[in-house]
Length: 206
Image 1 (cartoon, helix red, strand yellow):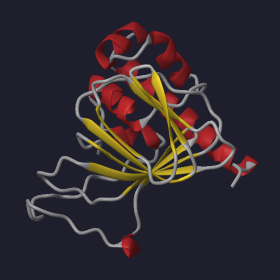
Image 2 (cartoon, rainbow, N blue to C red):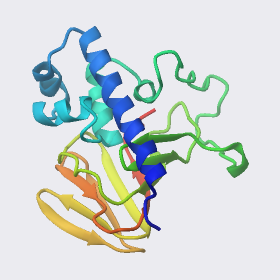
Image 3 (cartoon, rainbow, N blue to C red):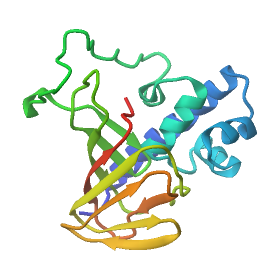
Image 4 (cartoon, helix red, strand yellow):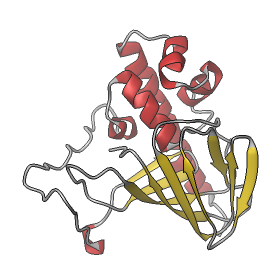
């Protein structure tokens, strides 16, 4: 399935919005790009490209930026006059599990060529972030990035180029990869079809 022109426009709009919100929050905090780079562990050049809508940023890297700017990740995906939905109250939820029904729908976030579909409701003491990730062809490769936690990816369809500590691994349907996220890593779809991946990361992003 090739990416359509309409999908490209949607992806680019989402990418530009994330970058614009990043710039807004950074300036509100009185941070320079250099200061944000120091606090997030990402390069000045990459952050500049994200802010200008040239490059997309993955959710785990965005989580580091959000922490540096003291903002929830969800706020980067909403226009200023469209408030992000408040987090679901967890006081009345059981500590040990959540149950998410398919018919309840799922929250989706779009950054550049990548759509993240969250698979689990919030739980007060749960640390895994399970997602279905759709990666459209093309786009720029995001910067290799290390962060706290662990990361698991299972390819459902398509192909995925996954770079870990400078070494590229091509994953096919049924292949999986599990790593300590502190190792610099990045992923990319260099084919002409959408790649679908089940991904689980820690810590939770939302």
